[in-house]
Length: 275
Length: 323
Image (cartoon, rainbow over all chains, first blue to last red; front, top):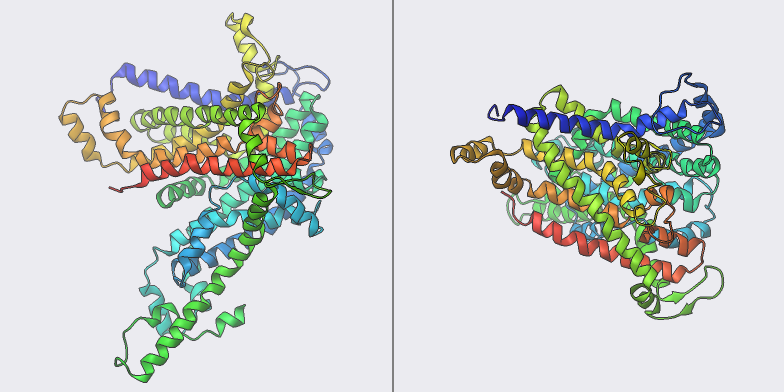
């Protein structure tokens, strides 16, 4: 590795630093705009002489952030635990119990793995309308659970298929049934896979946009991303407030990422190995 | 459900294997029959997932195909038109342009991040080990974490008339080429592409770094013994070993390009004209503003098939044999 010449090292370093800067600039530019006095027209990147941190408070009220956070959390709470549970069960059934004809079910699920949401959103709208759920959070929760199943089951099956079967046989000797086996032996072992899946589903739900704008009109019943769309429509001309609001709305995902960074990256690693 | 499963005899799937007991003994036959039943009971584990999937994905999917054969405004009676909607998708100049826009976005969403990601990954591996490497990875990954909508808003601002891009251009004396990048006919689509590249770069880089860390170091030693420079080493060792990771990057990013919606909706709404309109946005517009549900559905089916046509060969090529 020390064969790398000094000049090569230097160019490489400058390139990496430049790339990091370019990646961060949009965030900084938004921050600098968000701190300008209300009513002014900000330019690209200029640190304000008198940073108006109060703009964030204004945006918090204007965007109705409290209600939005609550709504997003309710949607995440409706989607993620249930989706993870039924996907883990299905992964267990297909990967470990190897139910007869499981290949057929798995093939059917694979069909949905590359499906763009746009391809089903039109009939979903009418289906949700007929169920009388338009403009409620269920309109986002229920379809999302279904739409996540291909990936989630795929993910959990990949875990369970590698679990040695002797493990179950040993537990059987103790006389535990399949249900106990699942909860006492397999779920604890599947914890890393479940954790990664939980993080990914949380992120995808929080950031879901298309379903939110199609199925729910009321921004306070949407996901964070969907609400941001409405916020832009309403405050698009007030750049200062728009930037402040956008930063507020993207902060929760950043916090989650920073906390769970290692799991995030591990989730990706596993995805690449198994996917 | 708990009771149904809890009541299953202590001998599903696994215990049905031949083993204990004399072959042919009544005990074994009994166990075997029970085992088979228990294996069918295993379907109960798969059922909840399948039901949700069936009702909220497969059913709408079948309905999309059905809608695509009708002319329907979403309210009145639908009229059977056979394959007319598909004919429109493949002959209408605007719709063809919209589909080609999605393919142009592949250059930015897929090829740029993969090539750049390869450069970054090999640089990080060579010169930025330790904390510096972690920092690079973390920062590059940030855009992947935030909502695409936020990325769209941020870049709309950065590329606007008074935004950062033009500010920098003016500073370096290129004031003559400043413009609202997302608003002009020739620059709008590449500008949208830049947003996509920004989002996708981190994902590709991390996948590629991971792939590189799995390459057997002896391969590099062998290459060096043969007198290969870092460039030859890259093409002879690194690139072939990363086939699978590159395949994953391309698959994920091509789907993101063809099915893009959020970024375009927020940053340009498809304009100016239809310069940046992509199939996803057009489906939304056709179905919910223009009330052409049949045509929107036909476009949806075509989009789904286009994704498969692009992604399946990649899977086949990069996945065929494992070392």
